[in-house]
Length: 608
Image (cartoon, rainbow, N blue to C red; front, side, top):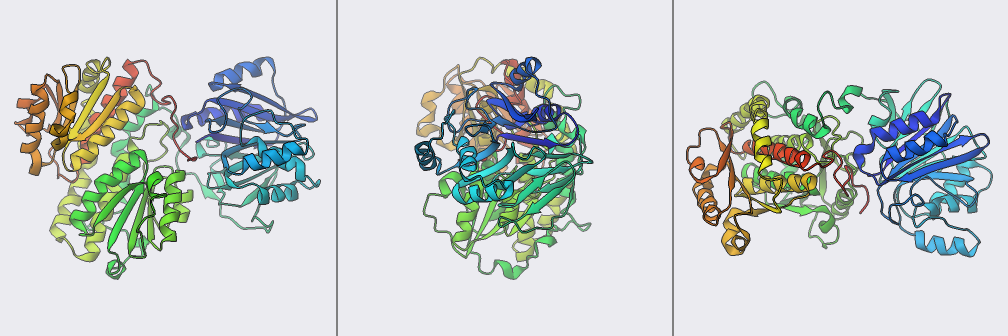
């Protein structure tokens, strides 16, 4: 979840490092720092807090050089502080590094190194790497790095400077993302593409345990043993403007309004002219499902909520039992997964460490695997047997919006495709839903027209201490996502409940000071939902209902109602979540929060 940048060329390294870190601020961080080879030595400046704090230091103590590395840290080992910020060096700053991930055996290594006279400055696991490099240094930069990699254990993206080689950076990765941008007379390193997009569209995506020796004129790619490897240059197809706000006050609002295009693009690549669904690149046939007795969906956070919706899709259309597991829990649950299991993992970034490890655990038990991700070439995409990509484009705000809705679209289409192969539902039903998906971007635009209404509703929520979200069937999964979105950006405690569970304890919490948001888009349980709304209304709660524009009943029971167009009930979750995204956004900004970078959170969670 931290940001990494590196530069080697003829320009001022500090300029790129600061600009690159600024473009990675969306990842979440508590401190920032850079190291530059400056007049014969590696100099480090780092500062707790926002990047501007570091920039202010550099105004008084500028670093001038043509090679350097930088980092924004999200604390795992050691509290946020100047000392614990990256970069970290050895005893003499001979080797200086930045690191994403966790060094699992750092305590054992630290004891051994201290016994040999090494002096540590920080509380971090990262500093261990610099001291190990110092300890095993044989004068050959590459050989020293290779020795270090045989000693440390854990996950990492590592970018390394060596004072004895002032024209070279060496980097490597394991279970954490790292890319190299290719320029002319200069090259760039980063943990994510936005850091380099203003400088180059040509990148290498490193895979686990690959190394890169980077100078201003060349990039040499090697395997762990030092053997040269060939890698195709990837072309970045989205524009630099796509990573900017585009006139919106915040990335989150921009990304909410990008959902019509993101959904259109994700739908378009999987629909045939006759209304059938196309995932032919998976290479699946009807026979592929003959041995599948159950499907496991595992994910974290918002992606987990997408999985809960997908359970309804798959069980209804494909007729195979589905379990949905939180990835961090699945890993340690002694699962009953087997070769008869299809494991579907969902991750926006494709780098979520718990989801990646859950995928590996499922594969160890013999499961076949498929990843749904927004990130081409990501760790999860490479680990899975098959991949379905969403076309959300870059998502900068920490709170996921367009990535979530495109996950729902991709999972719905995937369920329809599986049912198509199995002949488990009629072609007419498939076509009915796919026709609805074609119209979905226009329907989303209609819902986005409710933004002023949602802004007004937010005025009534900003002083609330607790807010409840209610739903039944698929609407309950959507209520879970709505509650998560509100609490992660507004900092108001919000919880979702299956509406039928109200009488089993939750009603005790309902008061006049407890706003309730009720989602009612599933006609087969609508009468039950109206009864649940009346239960909380009778206890004095104000109720915001989210229902169809032709539903005359819901308005009789709610304090206020937000309308969405009438769509197929399996498409409704993709529409009904959008008012809740807008509500979370406006509630957050009206409370004065940093909506794009909520406290304590990060975009890509690459540590346990």
